Length: 158
Image (cartoon, rainbow, N blue to C red; front, side):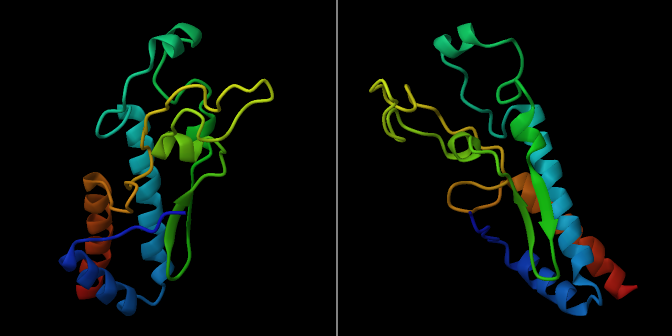
């Protein structure tokens, strides 16, 4: 699991003020979790932001035409937002997710029963979640959270 770092002092200040001022903080965290899901869906649609690495010639020859990470839709469909009064999260139980998010080196997962490396070649990271390997939000996700927090901040002022 990755923990997200918000490196925007104004956003943290507003978020704290809004969270303390709401009678139902889950409304805010639910909005943020929904924004996370939208960002992930947009990342799949755009084939990465920034753009994902292309497929190897071997992979290109073996697969059906179509977008990267979208052959079956299983990974995309497995993404689930969740929230409670104190947290917003997005997760997947797909066993391939971490490899696609962070990449994998040839042989990183050991050897097959025939002695071949798993994976058989290097797999480049194709980050689809709204954060990088250090937990930093991608700009689109930070902007979406800012909009969510600002919406509830304005409601507190009304």
